[in-house]
Image (cartoon, rainbow, N blue to C red; front, side):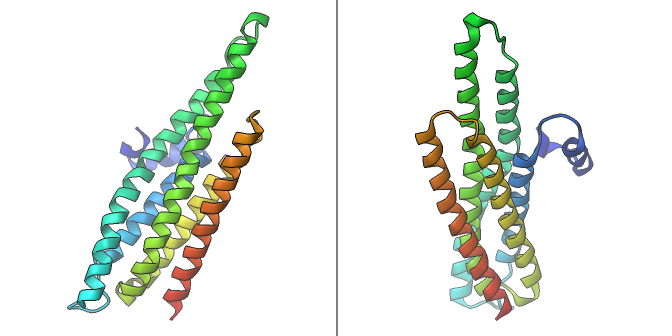
Length: 204
């Protein structure tokens, strides 16, 4: 699995000529790292002793982010696996008697390859919601770490959306494509709002 390999090997994998891992996995990884930075700051209350409000808010954010980060981490390899299935479907025989099966396999693979980045957008938005809590209750000296986490989650959400859009262009079921596009837009807007709010809190 990509996430179990050393960092230098991961970077080499992204720069290789192989079709996967690609932008989808990179987006998931960016968001997973962003969530990790938020978790770090969630362990640092605003003051040395920490008020009850700060500790309670940060504990709640930590609980949510642990699950979010795990799912984003899983998405790194899931995206690569999903794209491998798309490539495999396109490589199926094009003989006249097999064209219908090939088309169906391609459409099925494209849907799966769209589901993973859609999850990344949703999870990134959820993590950014927690970022607002951490920006408000976390230690000010770690504000730059929160800011970097927010930036990475924002980038992960945007990157995942790009991957969704490219896949939707090849999905023949327009009703399904429109529904996914609308859902993606909703989560993307939520991510952007939360990121902007967190950034504003860091400036106060």
